[in-house]
Length: 375
Ligand SMILES: [Zn+2]
Image (cartoon, rainbow, N blue to C red; front, top):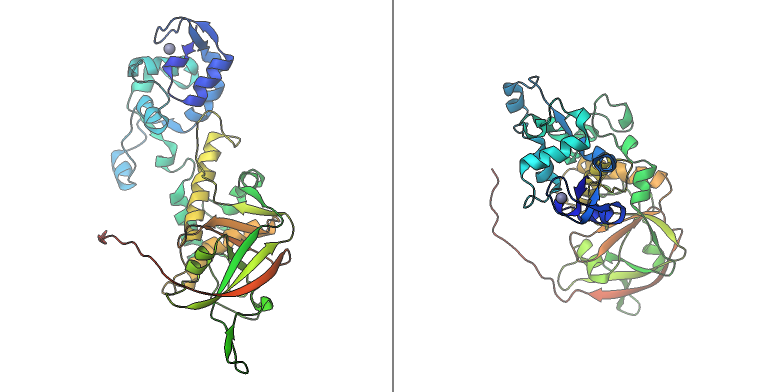
């Protein structure tokens, strides 16, 4: 009885059935002598997936759908296959897939072949379901132009970082930087020793966090007036980050980490391997968190551009502060200018500036592609 390993494509589900199933004949693809799992046992795994879709009777008028750019409704079978490629389409036709789905959770259907009727939407497309990276864009716009210092008071549904950045999410992105690790910080330029007629790197005390009296426009992570320590894990990345030009002479400090530090790590690949076995309490939450973390990581990696307004940095500054106040000591993310990673520290209490050397940039390589206007 039940459904067998051959009926599915999802590797994690297949290995689960291999472990938990019993050898039998499959009711759907008719494979014999294979590991099968009953519909009842599959139900608990499928609940998170079914939760992403909603059935629409005639409430969704066409003009509203077109106006809000909501895709046409489809069958539940095609949505689930497009999004997750769960079932083995070579062995099961759509009718059989609909039968499996119905038998797993008959109570969500009015009739047995309803999973084949074109009345299903993704809740995210209908935009009253879970949020995706378009909610990140709404958040960015709100915090720049509507409400900044008390964002949780904003009277709108959707993504509220104060709710979403919770214990579960912080645990997911948590990592450690070990004591003894060496990082680099670069500053454009050097000092001139007029007596000896030579140039020297900046002294170590000038290579830590800039004094808070030095008010810059802020960066992707730090707001104006609150300075952080920007480091990278290799020398060419740190030089790329300060946009050192060919021939320029720069001061580069070696930064040693003096104790194990808890950091928020955005260099992990945030992705869902299987919809059935999630890191979070629900699949819906995992989709939300991953989409927000990827949008945040992407914005944090964008190079600081002197031609854009300082308010464009506010969304990432806001999130960085949420991460800081729960006790993380820094944030690690991929550099978009070099091949390495950047690590930003909120304080320089647990780092020691070991030595500072002068380096001269020998070469810079650029890759380009023809620009095609989107408009
Ligand atoms: Zn089967």
